[in-house]
Amino acid sequence: MHARRTGEGLGVSVAALLPLLAVLLLQWGCRDGGVAPPPPRPPNIVLYIVDTLRSDGLASYGNPSASTPHFDRLAAEGVVFENAYANASWTRASIATIVTGLYPSRHLAERRADSLPDEVETLSEVLLRNGYTTGLITTNPNAGRHFGFDVGFDSMIELYRRNKPGRVHSFELITASDRVTDRAMEWIGAVPEPFFLTIVSVDPHAPYRPPERFDRAAGAYTGSADGSFEHIDRPDLDATDRRRIRALYDAEVSFNDDSFGALLAHLDELGIRDDTIVALTSDHGEEFWEIKGRRGHGRSLSEAVTRVPLVVRYPRGGRVPAGKRVAAPVELADVVPTILDLAALPVPAGLDGRALFSGEPDPARAVYASLDLDGYRIRSLRKGPWKLLWYEPMNRFELFRLDEPGGEERPIPQNAGPQARRARSELKRELAAIVARDAARVEAPEGQPEAVPADVEDAMRALGYIE
Image (cartoon, rainbow, N blue to C red; front, side, top):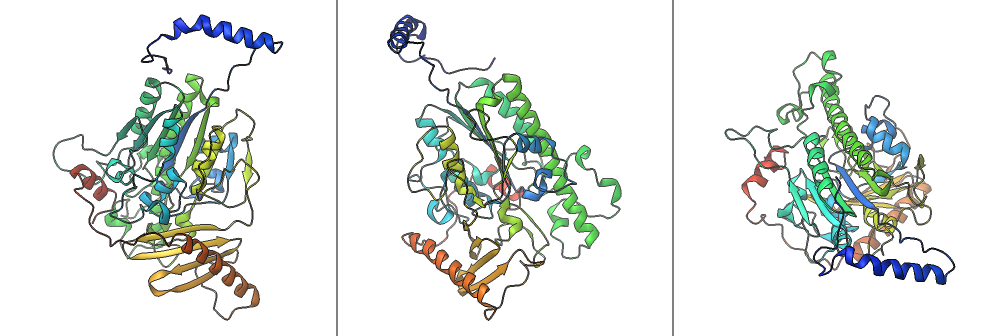
């Protein structure tokens, strides 16, 4: 049976207080000429982050060949933000933004050696302080205890430890999403409400090894390419091999969708799904050779790695209408203020994000992203069809118009027409304002992470973060 928070530990039983509470409620109700309504019930919250999920990996985001019925069911029952953008293109920096509402240059967890600073407040800390039972289930060590992501959680389940003796295989430390769902259901069944559960699943992240039943394209391919790093990073792949590798990625997404469906079904069985804010998103996408032959993430700020799904379902209160699609651009920095706003809790001042259900999203909003990793130092600002990239070490700017064919492949020349010159000038000015605001950051040389535990290092190697 689903547990609920009790009055144990308060020095007096709830049962002993019930008669007094009944009298007080009766007196208050009689004074107002009626029975007093019960206080609003705080919603439960599930924040489900699918590592490396491109928005076009879902049927609800325009991919007719995708098999994602459970993600799409959530989309049909909630609000789909069609143009949601990650503020970074690798896991630690992006999830830090998701849980703080701050850009990477403000939460400071954006380089290989960085951890989330103690002084940066997270969503879990705010909810814990407001009476929530909080839990984190993570399958990626970049969003784990060693890098400071355990703050504000009553319990934390890290699913990347070895569980078999002997030789370590590249896929052994990557916990599949069905096991993640099993642990999530156990956790939900054991904690009192209201609860806040963050889940980081990792199936679509390379290496791509989907269960056979989700690999619908296996019979049509006769080559040798598979989803291992040895194959997907080879420079001699032909178009057929590349399609096969993308099909393996899509099969991983489909498998994760199935696991997510089991979690939704569990909330239904407990009778708490309509009382639960469910937010689905991703930390970043994945490149599949679209631009300059790149595959993977964390090396650019292209649309393939920054555009991600964001879906919110919460039928209680009428603020999240089922089936609504929002075309205006939004950012993952918006997740914290949006969840707090829906939970009727104050939104801290100074966040970079906005509450998405308080007023209409702005179609002219500029969305920001940055990357400071392994020698790549890039910032981007997108507004309407225009996107400006700033390569900091070279102080080089590139402007693109994304509503034209191949718009992200060819920078617009400096001497282009007046419309492009105005866009370049405006975006450079807005980007400079963001940089100036962040200038108080103390630049420290990137060092080595301190004493990374062996199991964390093994998991990071299995996911390709360590060569």
